[in-house]
Length: 393
Image (tube, rainbow, N blue to C red; front, side):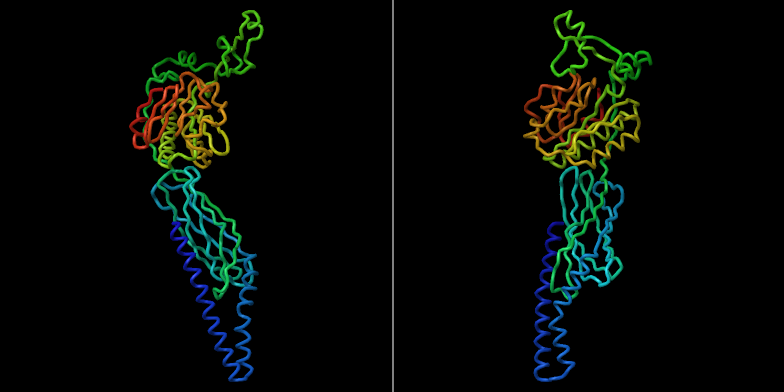
C-alpha cells in the first residue's frame, strides 16, 4: 500500500507541471491575440487568463477552511478478510473544492504494523463526497484508520495546499480461537464436593486469617502480625483469606518489538484459554500490560471474557523488545494470586519475584529462552494449538 500511495502522489505531482505548461501556452496565445487584434473581448480574455492562477489560489485557500472528514468502519472482521470502509469528505463552504488527495494510515495497534493508501475526492459547495476503501490484516488486533494528511489541489491543478483533516475509525480484527481442555485443576477440582472446593478456593472474606508463616521479601508489610512477631523475634505474616477471583490470574504481557506472528499467536492463546476457563466455570482474573499501563478484569462468564480480550486487543503494546524487557518496572499487581498463567514473548524477569511458586510462564517465540528459574513452557507460533489444546493447571 505504501508504494501505491507514493505512486499516487507522484501522479498528482506530474499533473502540476502539465497544468502550468498549458496555462503558459494559453497566456501566450491570448497575449499574442491581444497584441495583433486590439479588441475589448480579446484583452478581457488575456486579463482573465493572467489572473486565473491568483483567483484559483484564493478560492482554494477559502474552501480549505471549510473541509472536514469522517470514517465509517464495521465493528469487527476476521483475519485475512477485507473490511469495507467509507471516507466522507464534507465541504461546508460556498466554493466547490478541487481534487483532494487524502493519505489514509492504517495501523495495527497490537502489532505495530502500518500501511498507507491514497484516496481522491472532490466535494461540491455545501455538499459531501465519499470514497470506499478496504482494509485487512493477517494478524489480529485493532486496525486504526486515520486520515490526517490531505492535499488540496485548486480547480486547474496549478497549486497544492495542505489541508488539516481529523478523521479516524477502528475495526477489530478478531483472533482465531481453538478448544482448550483443562484437566486436573487443583484450583477447582472437577470431582470434589462443594465443601472441598470451598476449602481450596479460600474464603470470600479477605479479613479472615487463613494461616501464619514467616515473612518473606516482597510480602506486604500491613499483613505482619506485630504482637506475634515480637514474641517470636522474627517477622510473622498473616495469610488472609483469598477471594475466589484472586485464586487464578491469566496475564498477557504484551511487548512491542516481538514479531507480529508471535503477538498474534499469544492473542489466540489467551483468548482461547479465557473461553475454555469460562466454559468449565472456573472464575479467574484476566490481565494485560500494554502501553497505557496494567489492566485487570474479573471474569465470570464468556461475555466478560470477550469484552476484556477485546479491550486488550485495542490497547497498544508497551514499548520495548525481548532484549530490554528486564528493565521494565515490576508488576506488583500480580502479587497475591495463588497461581498465574503468564503469556509473553519475553521472560518477565522484573515481575518474577511477584509471581507465586505455582505460577507458569508461557513463552512464544522463535527460539527457547536461555534463562529463567520458573517453570516455563515454550512454544512457537506454529505450535500454539498443539501446546495448549490440553492444559493442566
